[in-house]
Image 1: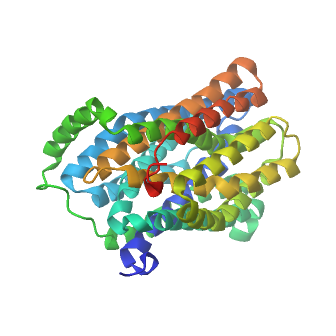
Image 2: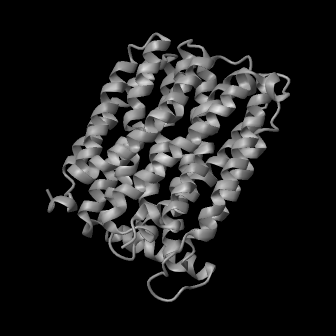
Image 3: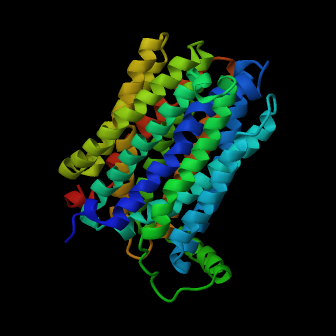
Length: 421
């Protein structure tokens, strides 16, 4: 059997993570939070800007939470996972590119373009995740999933490094100032995302759906019917439902830290240039650590690997309450980078082992739905606490309970790699 890292469809699939990480790094975690506060919400109190950003993330997450299971079920029946991946990617690329043309003070347009881009990116990931089952065998899920995340952190980090350089030295690139450099960075992220999506669009070989393929309208109806059936019988898949509950809890904290960390640092008065540098450091730390945790998960089991990651996140969240200096922010960035890729890749591969045969798209729809509900609740919680109390430290402390509860529920999920232990 060909080694998974030597298969063209596997490598092309993994490079989609290299592609879409341009959005998640340069836009979502990097420049958008800073630019939203300092350019599009100029003259507004930081807590108001934080609440606007949290609600924008939350609304996009809520819409995805509604769409995710329907899209997944539809893909199982239409056999169109790769086609859907490309279509939603194009929507995300358009929204990202549009950010480069939003004027100063126009925070509502910025929020709208951002939500379109976020919906496209996260909807595409439903089909990207489900295609893991098409490009690898069960014994390779951990390594292939980790390869995707590691390439994502490397690719996203390389583009982000170039974009940061543009903002620090705009005249080197013939740009007027840092603001123009940031706007060009949004456009570069859209181009990067589109270009490196093409290998997956060309080379990934999708396995045919179970049963005859059907048209789009029929697949939607059957998808909705299948979704209702799955919801009504989900108790039959106890290990799946338990894992989804655990995932919803701990990934809520993971997503919220990723999307709001830079905004949190700005609210504490730390310089934005240092915060972006720390985020860049996180990307390059996450690249080898995702591969290492993929190997570790293959050795000790993905469930134990996830629990280790959750424990690290819990400790980092507790320490964030006391954070005061740039050096401490950098230290936390390194710690988060060590587990950020691992917790996501191991979660995806562990869930892939729990999915019943023929239910890949549908169950990964549920998987992404829980992640999007987490993307909805976490930022909304941060936004609400910040708006009501004006205390950013208090808002970040709410994430502790998510990691504690998520780890406890995950502990109860049977591990199929260890005979249910």
